[in-house]
Image (tube, rainbow, N blue to C red; front, side, top):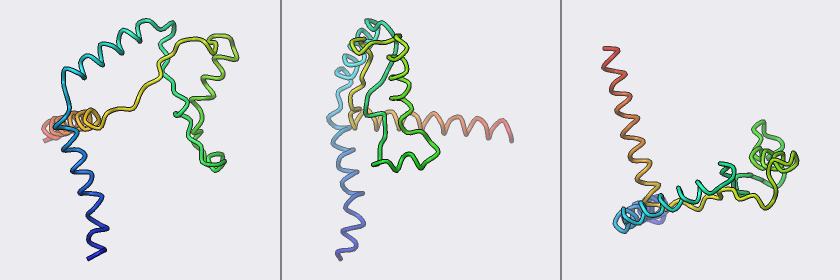
Length: 125
């Protein structure tokens, strides 16, 4: 019985959180947030989006992997080093995405990808 609970609990919690997020999602609030971000982005001197959390570290283990997980920070530091940016330059630092918005984006994207696959299959056959 414990193994069944262990296996189903994450799926149940995911379903509950997604249902709650969709039920409480306010389209008007989302539109206001997009408008606010567009105004904020228009005020920036350079259209750069960066957050220090983009740099993934794993206590030095990341150096053993062929993918540079800190490349965004290196690019930002390079721009500062060359004098293109300063530490005071306003850049866009994104916030966390809401669960409801993430759910909506994934749903729309999967619908779009499925429609592309359908069109490709129709053109082949």
